Image: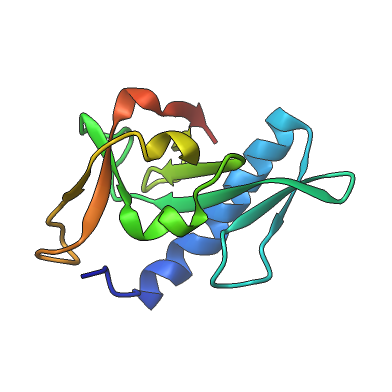
Length: 138
């Protein structure tokens, strides 16, 4: 069971969230960040001298201003994007803050079923302690 695609949420959050994360990464890491031309692929490509050196996946969560939970649930369906040079960003609803983690660490945590507003049962998530994420202002 997986969360169905919600076009209205994609239209509202996708482009601005990717742009904010790209600007943040460029300012702190001295790399160029480009949106992935493959709309089904990972969100952002991090480049140095036009060569890919990493990637980032971006989501917006419906909490603000901070994550109110002891763990952050990362969808198991995102595993296809995980790797050594991949970052996962979970932005707050107001897109003022982000929690981030290297995806190679996400798989160290258990997968569990989490009921949510989109899927009453059956969707699986990595249950990662919030303290394992970095926290940044965007």
